[in-house]
Length: 200
Image (tube, rainbow, N blue to C red; front, side, top):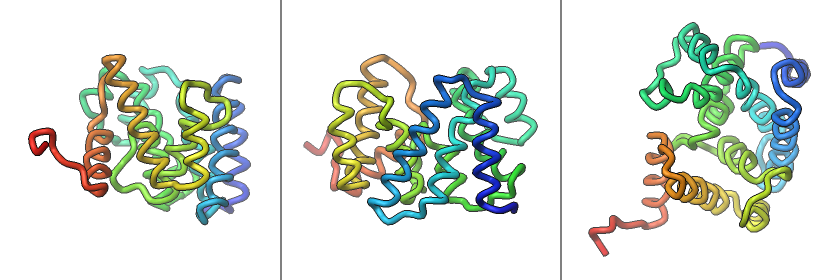
């Protein structure tokens, strides 16, 4: 693997090549918020930075091209991703990190691959990226300020509240829920002592 500093420099260069101004602004805002959370919650800032700068690198790539890259990378795709290839951008970015830069840090790779859906394997890096992606400073929606406040105080609670907010929004809009999102929701709620509706 090449040096960490060089990886970050290369990722920044790629952001200017691959992303629209809008997406790039979001990407770097996620990086800035991730670094704040890393400092606040005692996480490795360099690993958080790599995850943040790479998470949306392929977000503006066309659906057809994403499918082709995923196939070339031997990425398994589910039926939802086949219908909506944009959902593959995280998994493609993670595999790109592995192949292009020799990154083998599974915490970084999982954070990038599943930053949209969440994942049961998430540690601090995954949770920081997941939260930062939703509450970075360019985001503007009802409740975001409260989510930012929680994020600075309690990462676990912020992860739960952001996940809940995303699911509530998806259900309200009749959007599909990714299998990983359902799985991580059930995992988190179980750890919090949650019950099935039938048990009430």
